[in-house]
Image (cartoon, rainbow, N blue to C red; front, top):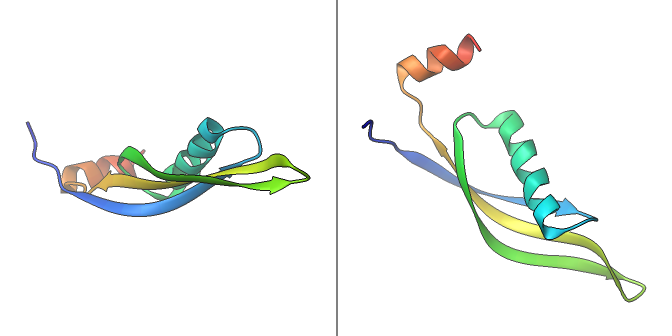
Length: 79
């Protein structure tokens, strides 16, 4: 089993629909930029209220992505 080293970064996702969708939105966007995105942890949930109703859900996530080996980097580069 290969040992893995991770970078952890904090991101915030938002949705007008649900907490789950806010998480999904954040992960989908992070995946467009970060390679080897492996896991997430919800750190905080909050939202906005408008006219007495939930207007937007917001989630703060820690996401972990791996440092890639040279071989993995070549595989990513060639798609």
